[in-house]
Image (cartoon, rainbow, N blue to C red; front, side, top):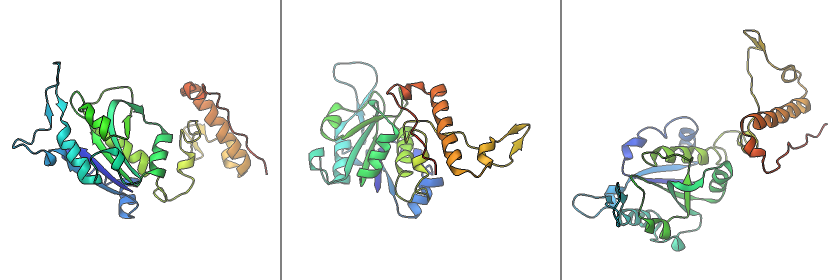
Length: 242
């Protein structure tokens, strides 16, 4: 997969993609990540990327010309109807669909090239959304100063779902939200710490009982912390005994 990030602050991304899973995925050539300065695609002598909004109001709006030029340069097309197969152009904004695990899974499975546009100021000229954007995404119901932090979140969520990125075929399948529930509690050595003991079932070696316990704990944790995830009638999948 190839991920291109468009921003007016490329220095923000300095070393952020050079750690952990993303770094390993880059070194293994599972993903290629590039950061581009939108100012490089402006044509005026001041390399302007924003202007005052028509109709008045506070703040500035990101101009369409540099973004169109950048997307055209990266995809070979100036409108989404002409994108090569597997290309997704994402605009990060508070007005977008909330990022969910299933959305990250969809991008990881279906996209070969993702172009991420980091919004700024009061937003981006709506013609960018109308002509270029395939997915408008928000990472939460709050406003950031810009889309750069959101671009890091989105990239991480996608890359860890790419084949072989985690080094284990089941790691991503067992993550929170993958089956509609939060992840179960986890424990490691020592078996007792300050009077707090690891649940006996995890020490039993009975894999069927351990799996049953994990699913039950996942359901309880979801019900306690994120009951909204259960509103759709989700029930804990049955565990087959051997």
